[in-house]
Length: 448
Ligand code: SF4
Ligand code: SF4
Image 1: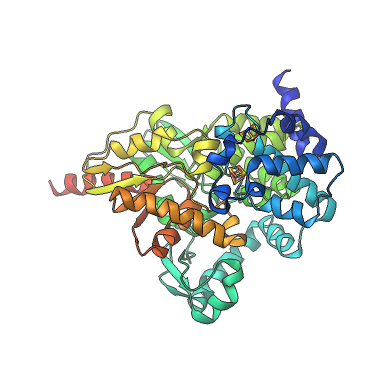
Image 2: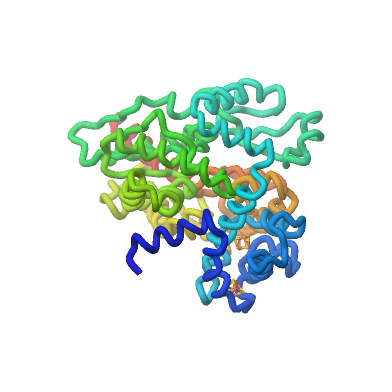
């Protein structure tokens, strides 16, 4: 089968549920997925594990169960879509495709619940979304106590009670929303003299609104490596939080807007600092737009030119070795979409190990899911917290004083996981440690 036909075939699972039959048939119910499924690991119920979800999907396709049957609905959303089962499956069942196709079919059948419809339609209008985020940032001191701009905040008591059903109980720590988003902090083009390459930075919403300092660090690192960085102002959300809720049409709209923004930049590569954003560009956009004659080829073009910042620095260009000492004992958590989606795992470690003074201490099972799953942590907080407790214990056991990772959603979850165990640690994007090293090197040079 040629690539074009294959792409269209995969894409049709978002339109026709019957297209996942081939994936379902691959499952031999061996149960290997039990060893790695984080939800099963906590709930220890056969209904939580991948093979049971596959059995329920088969029943839906055979007309034995309805998609909106409460049992099916519970199964559909009691999953992080973390891909862990796929990495331990002897027959390579593409469970992510099954799960996303089922959720898309549910939306086709019943539409979206009003709250999701409202949030997702705001995402399609970046100006409105931006205004909403700024309003939220301005209002948050009323609802949360703590610092803003990526620092830890916890809900104030009255809101803690009301928000418990959304995972916002009093103990919960969240990063504050910035009052000055990343794309407003930096110019649209950050130039360097005699640039070796011109790249476009796809910031995603999490770096833009929650961790702008990590975004600034990423730009500083590229500049230190003689790369000109374009940060297109009119980029939108990558769509991953929408895709996992089955709203395929909204993701297509976002994907087309993002492709237009990157095309207009005139750059040669897209750089991401978030595993979910990079995964969307590399895998979701080509599949979702595979049958679109205008955007399909553009999506494929960019899929081949999208890199996590760590891969770009270590594989596409030659990383300028940092010289500034960063005296820290660090452990590294592998985000699911970065490792199991983008296949990036060695590169962030290579970067960390290149930093003088930094000691990398590996935790047990560093690629075990942290329990975030995007909105899973909001809808299934108790399960997410139990998954996170295990991750926190693995971190604590290393004796590291800082945890580095490559995904803002994991950073949020790790912050809360560790705090719940009374084991607060520095949570940092790995690129910020490299930026710190370059800054120290520059400071030492200018003092010399
Ligand atoms: S590991 Fe794969 S083949 Fe085995 S039960 Fe799980 S999904 Fe099915
Ligand atoms: S995607 Fe993750 S949570 Fe869902 S069934 Fe597979 S391993 Fe379990």
